Image (tube, rainbow, N blue to C red):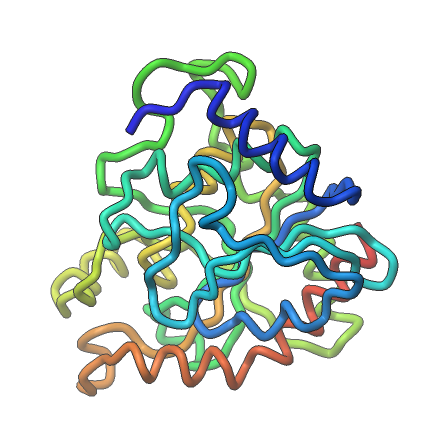
Length: 273
């Protein structure tokens, strides 16, 4: 599906009419991390199915709704659930919400995900600030006719994962006595987990973690000029590292276990933005 600027505007207008809030910060909740939504006060729930042109989440543990309200008086927009290529959505559809966030005034986007750990020096359960990504899918949400109202035809990806926001998050982690890693996220389309050979190749290329989300949205955010902070919850070692078979249930279970720690961390960051 190819979107026009009017498609983005219709979605943005629906959200703006539904809520008087003008959030400058948005948070995307990944697999097993939906518990953060309970921290939002003065809440308005908007099902994705009600927002014009929005895809609908089908992945397990993704609620599929936008939550608008405040955290400690700071207006936020929380997306509980996202859209993946493996569900059948295109990159453009997966990242559609980012252009809508731009139009409603969002300046900073905090993205969370559950990821497999490749770096043997990291541990299951660690949180990792993503510093860069590897995308060998050959896909981009900005393929096709460029929408100038959202961003330029050609755009830089050097600071797609904001250096400023990572420094702020690192300072917050230090204040909380929280050991947070930094590393490179490799994107694979899924839904199958990676083979041991693929993980060995990604390790050689410099990847520290691997997952099936995030990259389409980050590309769109770079196009739109939205600053991104991405936090991965390393829920398991990637294929071939421990010899254990991988399962979605294991990923969700550990992500849920770390949900409070991640929620405290995000809340601390929001207060400093």
